[in-house]
Length: 276
Image (cartoon, rainbow, N blue to C red; front, side, top):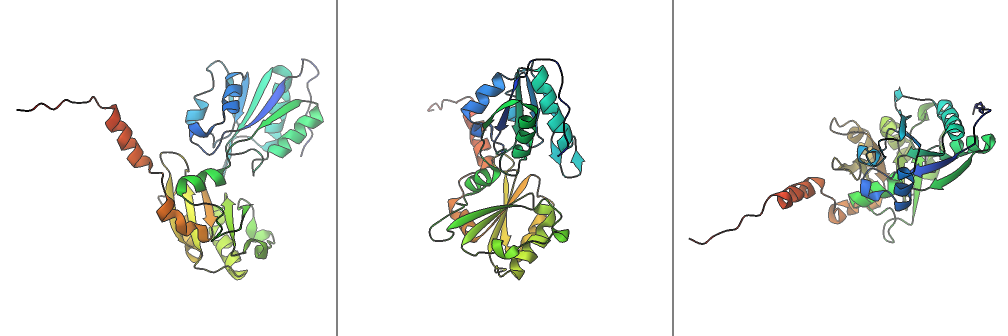
């Protein structure tokens, strides 16, 4: 982490590190909503949904700092510097992240920068992608008959060049949730199977979770790479690996297409039928 320059003038403001949740605007917490309305400037990530961004008042300064694979709009050091600079020039600064800022969101790194710069901060957690995607796909992350634990891991790293202890992720009694793992799906599936996880283990890739565009692609661990290559798979996407995935067919309650059709029907003027 590079040291950031600290402005010499101005009274320090405060930074709110906020999790925006997995996408559905209704999953934003009330506390997060209230703070967005009071913000002077908002630094937001690419995964924050347009519906949530629309809640920010028009007069608020909005800065896109989202990082996506191959499309980085700002480096982490630049984001850190912006947070400190804005805290010295603005009263209320919001750092808005998709999901939860403390789960693969680099929230801890950004807070360390604020501590070093003497800037006050507060954390408002959000629903992490694992909880949102699994709930909306009808896949309980734990279940007494299928999984006694759950593990989160990130697949957004150079797995082919980094030794991984796949054995620690291959427990058949645990659910494994992989964030940002689509590009490394083959490495992940091969690593788990070589560590002893069965190739028939059910897997799901949930795409654009909790939004009207959500899709859930289900198969076996041996097919994970094939699922990740499907042309209809859109980012962001989350992998869920474990026996609990077998419950998706019976517990799936979220049908955005059907809900949209129902809403359109309810929005139409009611017609009165008359007897002849």
